Length: 171
Image 1: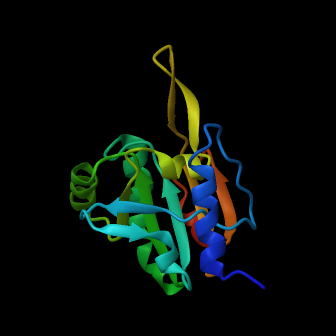
Image 2: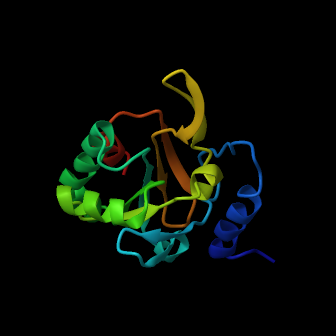
């Protein structure tokens, strides 16, 4: 008996978050489901967007120069994404108050998620060792996942600079 798409999407998160090593996802894999708080403090579950394309982009910290440029790029192309039945979702380890301030300050018309405990980053394999001021720390590697209407990862954009137009071109 075949599993539903939702069940196939839900299972990877439960398996991945308990592992300490980074998970390597590849195109064609089911997107791990995530259950997080939004910038407005509301609950969010990725599987609620089945039937739509999802641009899920991970960024290290709200209101920093690179992350702001990236978010504003997605903002500036948000109508074109909507035309392609695509929903943009940003995710970082920031708390909801920081995400809400960032969203308001730059007029971001899409949801920002709060991955404070970095479980979603771990499930997606974007939690990486980084060298910060001579110290090795775990941080978010800027990565975007394009997820299709069936909950499968269609494209992965790793170690990116602002790239809203590039992602849009793959729709």
